[in-house]
Length: 416
Image 1 (tube, rainbow, N blue to C red):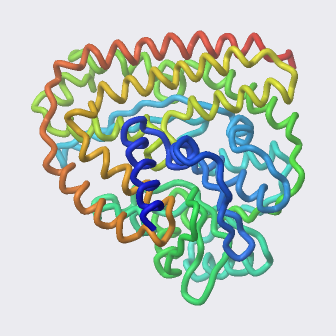
Image 2: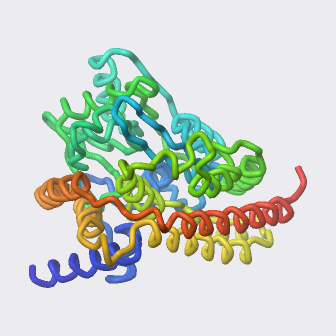
């Protein structure tokens, strides 16, 4: 038991320092080890919610495909920046997107499964009873299902009530018992959620209310799917949108220092209100230790390396470049939320993520960490805006690097 506690401590310490996901930090600390199986379902963990969901269903169905290749198939990386201002709450919310179609999770799932040639049924209904019955029927037929529940209502993330209805990310439901279901949310030990809680979570968000993808694992059309995903990535990130493509980073870099812009940060955060929360949000969104995989440049780099060998394309140097860019994002996150001044809140964010990875057994630890973390967030001191120029410069460097890298990707791909 002491050995397990020491291992957990070492993993969490690495996560807090590097921002890595639990799966990655565990591999670095403990090496590759066996995976736990629950009633025939093997819990492989994962790095990004949607790509891990697809990869884990395929692996459990006897068709092992790496998560990075699934990620590339879905269109690879994306870019998105939006600053929402809520005048009635006197607050601002920072939203960052790092995956292709980040604002359209259902389209991403449909596109990825279709490219892979993996059969699925997409189902939705307005009624909770019908949605619950359909899920049970699919599970009884032996089909794992991908759902999009509200994170607050799922419970195990221990989100506060003010996040009720803010949405969540894809998870897999792979079995049920009397009164509950078992979730694969990149956890490495069984994670059980009460059925009434799950049903409420599925019906909470109107844009994807009670959505379900019931997947039948099959041998994927991998080469065709990966090439289509790479082309999609190159085309999408060559677009001109300054909210949903690479120009979003350019707009963000300018907004951080330009008070003349409608949503320039010197104006939006003139009185300091909300700035501490924005910096915390940026760190959690950028670093893989966050709830949905961080900036994704690392998993994309791994996918490029695998795609290079699979398709015999000159992509290895690009993979190296995107690992460097992943490091640039890490440096940005460290500027936004320095470890020295924010060590405790970072440790608590890590504790919640690690406890979720440990399944239901980590629920008590997650609850205690969440209570302290949200209290600290509410009381966080407003940082000085003196660091705005440094943030702006880091974002500008990333924009230039990613623009050049995507141009190189276009050149590396064969003509259609």
